[in-house]
Length: 331
Image 1 (cartoon, rainbow, N blue to C red):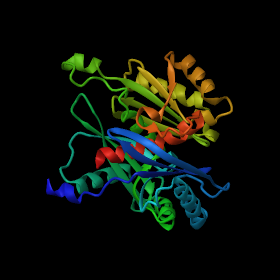
Image 2: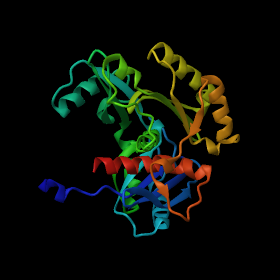
Image 3: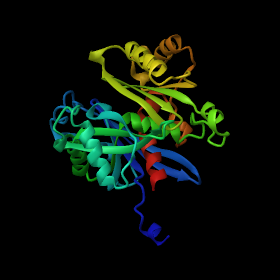
């Protein structure tokens, strides 16, 4: 256990960069209770950040770094030297790859994944950076992996903006993955009881749930089975409506994933829309015939007493809480 003495503590500050703003939050602990002690947000000028796969996303990295610096300064408690960083989902292509045999060496797994993604990558693979995480395990014993592919120079822009603000981004993740990790960090996470029997009984204990994440310029839908990702898709507002994406996702879930129905449907980010979260929830409930609830990050981390919990603030905090709680689990 000597290695634990030298383990680097997880960052207690997270930053999210969106096309309209930079948000930051600081996590602390009261015994075993995680607490968001401070948060801050800085608006960004139009066109400064244009998230996407094909081109550089930040038109002026120093200007973005200044906004990050202001947000970090508003948190108090001293400027952090390390942060966890969230970027928009649209900077990455997320794929689910199934492998019958998994090589024992991580380098070999990287090569297999790169080879499989080569034909569908929107840019040359040598320009890309991969993130590979374990996914679901099939009934046939095959392993599935969640793979996020981005251009290395795009991710470097976001990291460089943090570094110019004095903070090294030790972990970079997608915004919706942050929301998912926050949900799974809650004691009320929609996960079945793994101790329930075996065979068909254990299968029946699994919980299928849907996350609908709404942002200012895209929607992301993620289908989960317990803590395993089964489906992930995002679409810009210009490419179609949220209703269309929900319909297509529900059809895929029923036809291709043999889904038996969502036990829970959660929505994040909808408070910023003209009709608010209530309008989105009603539309989802009519289509999916299941009660829809808003993601509440307070189920994973409480808010400092003086912090008012508006629906808009909870939407901003949801991915930040998730990445901070993920880091604590990994530490």
